[in-house]
Image 1 (cartoon, helix red, strand yellow):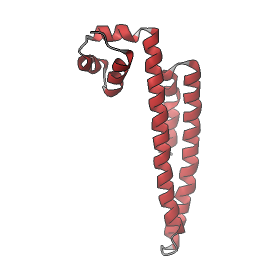
Image 2 (cartoon, rainbow, N blue to C red):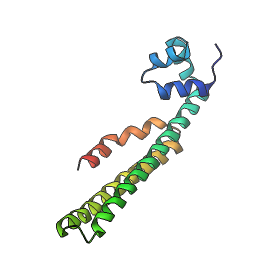
Image 3 (cartoon, rainbow, N blue to C red):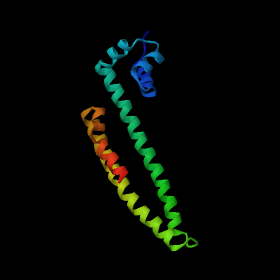
Image 4 (cartoon, rainbow, N blue to C red):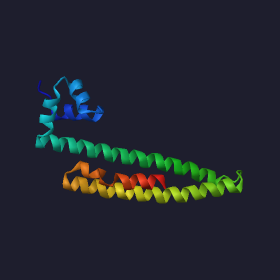
Length: 135
């Protein structure tokens, strides 16, 4: 079966394992591993992963901004008790700082991965990002 790099990349991105991707494509795992060793395929796969990461970052930022707008509405609502409004302001400030720090790390890491052509270096700082999220 003559599958394009794009078809294989799509299966790898959809499936959780190489075994599952190979089954979906109707090829053996060894054929899939052989294709993954091909330099042109690796470049295609890395580009697809970077695109997916960048899309995820943008979607996350969009959702975060929507949440911040909701908090801003609460903070501005004069009909709510003062403590509720103060808590909303406090949340806005804390979450903004956290989001900016995470966004900065993601941008730097994704840019380095793109420049080096190594998608997997994006995950070098995952533990740092998870720590930021939990603070």
